[in-house]
Image (cartoon, rainbow, N blue to C red):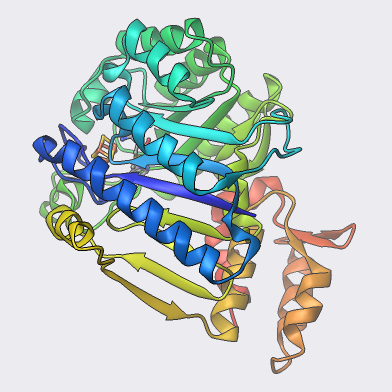
Length: 386
Ligand SMILES: C[S@@+](CC[C@H](N)C(=O)[O-])C[C@H]1O[C@@H](n2cnc3c(N)ncnc32)[C@H](O)[C@@H]1O
Ligand code: SF4
């Protein structure tokens, strides 16, 4: 079984920190919908031809860019094409028994009562709402289109439309976010009681406005100690409100894990469609080229512009270590045994050393990073790379 990711590469305004592939050429939305539907048909045939049972799909995720700048009609056409060309399977996944999980990322200022209803009727059953902060000064600095009131209102409209699985994205770890403001953001989020909360530490990515400001000295990053304090506060406050953490950046009410994201971490194959989208089947990684014009003209001629890479045994192992140790459940040691047959020794020694220093906890056949060290998970994981 697999997950499908559809990239919607449009934004009407760009946030200072974001380097996801996206264009402001909104006039291309219709042509894009046609092109992505062609890709859906082509990729489905390709997968069927390979004779694999991976035409079975258990999660669909529309991400961006900003999927909510597309009309509900365009989104429904794309979703219907996925349903017509892939076999959606019922899954016993947490909290959503019997339904494939179909998520759409939505920006708060695109949500009206009518649009929320139309998204529900189109077949989406999970929404990820990009709030980022409930402080208007932060939102202005980030160059978001919404303010705090709009974010809260969008949430209510989505609930009124019948969405019973909503996730909120927040960002922490930036200069200008005080501990009091962060406490306020977390409480406002938990007062709304979404099923899921994703919290990302602000990353300074190349090719962003934030990066330029950082280089010129006009943005000074928050020291790691400050981000760590915010992360610890987040863990404590969400835990007190009944949320469980299941991955470095992901928290949910019991049973409401994102099944789509979880499948990235447990190596369920996924197909990414649209420019810049990645696909992975456990061995081969493919990525569609960036560039909306080339994408649209390519699909007019039935040509897919993409690159691929066969992962070496070492790369696969490192990927496995990285993805599984970002989860709270951790790394299945039985799977490690299988991988290690092909490698020189040394990995187990490193594992034991990290367990000795308390950077890893070994129990129940898994090795995991303890909660208070998840903030520095990247550094711990790097130590284990072969
Ligand atoms: C790429 S956006 C797409 C969804 C939607 N357009 C939005 O902005 O909410 C998905 C999420 O990535 C996160 N994100 C993007 N760039 C980031 C960065 N540099 N650091 C931390 N989080 C980031 C934001 O929280 C955002 O909600
Ligand atoms: S964070 Fe979302 S809205 Fe902002 S530029 Fe990135 S994709 Fe667009």
